[in-house]
Length: 470
Image (cartoon, rainbow, N blue to C red):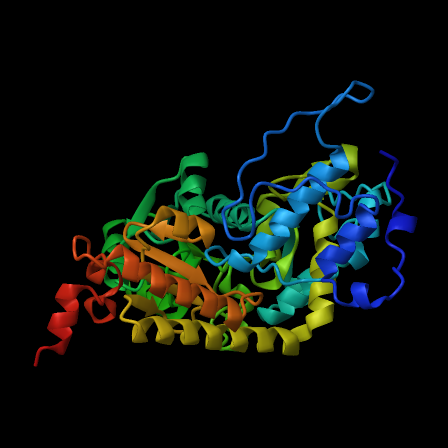
């Protein structure tokens, strides 16, 4: 196999009727693997079924190899992923972006944004200028002045949560973490890692924090400061904790602003809520906000953005002579490609484009919920959410085929920007047909999810009768 020349492989292809009909992914495949066309070995699966793990081993150059070539293996893998895109409904990843071909030449460089993004390094192979542009954009979105904030592009939402909670602990060493039971698991991971006391707050049936339980536990621990994780879009149900109610609860319980720290985990919804209302704003006494860049915006590798107040960061900053910088990040070395991808996406879409994405996703989520409801399927959709919670499909193969996430008797579909009405219609049609087979003989019934999503949203035999009864 020859070496990969980016200058050659990413030059524009001649425009033919065939190439005009190809998708960006198939065009990229032609550029990367021009010698592997229809003669490639086919994988033993199609888009209809779940991807099976490949039986791979590292090949030794120069030794006889009776199996497929490296290019063939990669082409088969790429084709499988391309087929499975249309069945990706259960996890919050936006796979609708076509700019990777434009940015692919950057892969020939090692870009490392080690240390503080606002300080230059002694090497030129970084993208901190792109990183600061992205941070400035989010600072404006979340209403904090350039000279008042600090932040960095993380490796994902978990790192943002680890950083935000660490800031809270450094500011309030005796503080107790308060997080709802529907918070992301990384919040409780942070409590274990930092050896911090924590309180798990109950939630209402829609997944939102139970503020009366928060109040009771704040009063119970009034002698210690509070570090509160506010979830802007819970992982499974998409519920949004109300920052204003939490702030009012803290005030009522006698917590002054120097005795609490609020971290907002807005992994999925942090790019949505600003276009609906301004619930995330540093004009309120919050300490930090984190989002995942690969979720609503979309990026081919995991990444995130963490923003906090500049006055807080000195508690973490350490001078590192080796890199001629200070470092207040979790990971130290950071992917220099992701800030460029985020910058490119934000510049290509702009706030108007993102606002359109938000509206389309909200509309499609409501469309899915209404269609399932009409078919007599248990379903729930929170306000301002794109996560549609439904009864868990009976067949594991169906769950795997559509790549659904399941908890207890519930499953959910996350209606991301790349999810089309056609995909939703296909999912609905197949689910309706499969349910007829699962429950046709009366030996099995659809699960009751009244305790999970509310009796008013449950269409099981018991609650359906109860709903119809006068």
